[in-house]
Amino acid sequence: MTRVALYPGSFDPPTRGHEDLIRRSLQLADRVVVAVAVNAAKQPLFTPAERLEMLREALGDEPRISFDSFDGLVAEFAKKIGASVLVRGLRAVGDFEYEFQMALMNRQLNPGLETVFLVPGQGLSYISSSLVREVARYGGDVGALVHPAVARALERHFDS
Image: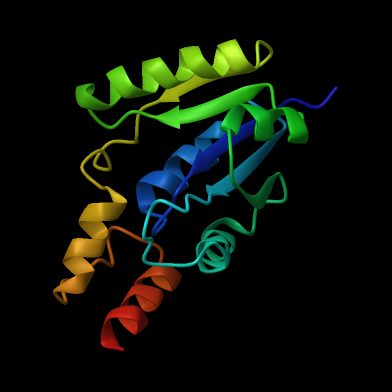
């Protein structure tokens, strides 16, 4: 039986922290599905297709990682793809309260889905997509924060 882990997020844009958690998630499951959440209420910098392409470029060399997008409830999407593990990252103590509440709700909606919290690797906990966007918006160097393909996409976006 194949154990599937789901790592959902906005990934706008994907960061080195995301990459770290995705690769480490492979220790928990046979296959990891990285899913871009589509939220009509948000104004993302990149389209879901662009975010998926950046994720593929950063992580596509690993055959046990697949990529998808979804809208709606993560618990329902997890059922649809057969995921039994939901991976969430905790960068700081402030993340815990929200993530804990979401884990309990997801368990209510999908009792077969277990949430696992991972902390970023050393030196990555300060990186967030919003911070990366802000630095890139003002022409700062994001090379250490994101994959080169993501850095190029940010540069193209803010140069236009």
